[in-house]
Image (cartoon, rainbow, N blue to C red):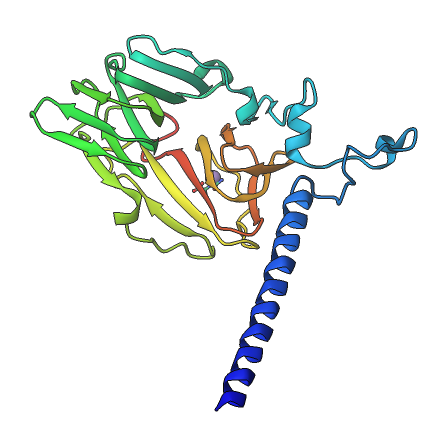
Length: 311
Ligand code: UGY
Ligand code: MN
């Protein structure tokens, strides 16, 4: 019995020291991972002194490093496309909104027929109304906002929720705390006998739609009926998946990457992109996306639909 207890004690000690060893190893690994995560290439610590011209032959590819490089941005503005990355965002008070800063990422001076902007609502903030005959779509990226409209019904919109406001519908968005929205607005293209209506929803409630010939998962946030002159697509790609069609089409796009990383081809340019990046695509710009990284890519995409391009 005594011997058995002794053996059990030794066993315990052994497993204890094995556990401690494993823990120590794990912590070391973790430390190494957090060091190496600072850059894609395993650059030695900058604290070590390096030989002359060392940097010329060991460029650091880490985006974090490059963001600190004076004047560096991944943003690009071309005649038929633009990539606007977070370090280029310029916020200023949104006209007609209270306690809200806005950054217009896409606007008609670029050639678009719509605007896409980020609205950063602060404590006790309130939206203004779009100009007359302008419809509005908003998607909550962070925080909670309350949408009120004429019927007297209030909607609480959390992250991943959205609302479509038809032109000239009186409404307000309020937030007690900070909240961030991505907003699209365009002058409504009226069509006889068709009128769009208020829509409130959330991405996770929308069905995944068929995408013949493609592998990505597609959800549409607005009805596909003729009353709606644009739609907002949510597109999901697993790492390694890509668009099969190398698209060229008459529609315009405004895109915001919500999750993941990948390569966006726009015209003859190929851009590494990631969550937070916004893209403008003019009609007919060749476009293609390949998802990379380790997690799902998800992007939100404005697309004009249901109207004859001759009108
Ligand atoms: O529907 C589209 O045009 C979409 N597939 N385009 C894109 O993802 N660039
Ligand atoms: Mn497209």
